[in-house]
Length: 195
Ligand code: ADP
Image (cartoon, rainbow, N blue to C red):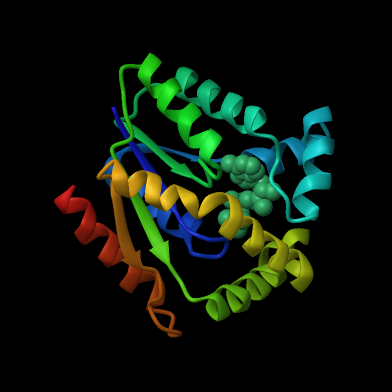
């Protein structure tokens, strides 16, 4: 089983590029953000709690997302691997992931990290707010908080995965034309061939 992580700040394009990767490599896409939004839409107790935190630009507790990931690993059949999108996002989550994978006799295969300048992120999230209607994209102060959370809690993972020899960076900016997504997608595809 392959266990890929697509990594990067909010608005880096993780979800967009995940879609092509899961098709090309027969992977199951696991987006913790999407799983949490499904809980919110279903109005579960977990969803209600998550909604408060997400709309403040904060993270939900580690145990919550760790449990979600483990469940998907155990219940998914017929794939060659998984693509984690938005997980892990904290050091404890990264440690927990290694433990969960250890129990499954697996390990993280590679981290594909999308780098994007901060001004591009702000522009993309503001644009996405209009299309997807996500409340956490609509307010610049919430976006700023998510980026702050990323720097504080998520960025340390870069060093963790570099030390493990698993970290691979891809320039996530493909220009402003409609071709931009394909340009970045092709860079990721080229990297995947080397892994
Ligand atoms: P983005 O990458 O644009 O921030 P996501 O859909 O990945 O969007 O996440 C949306 C929100 O869901 C995050 O801001 C956070 O509040 C919550 N969330 C998603 N994944 C995690 C995680 N692994 N740990 C804690 N909170 C998470």
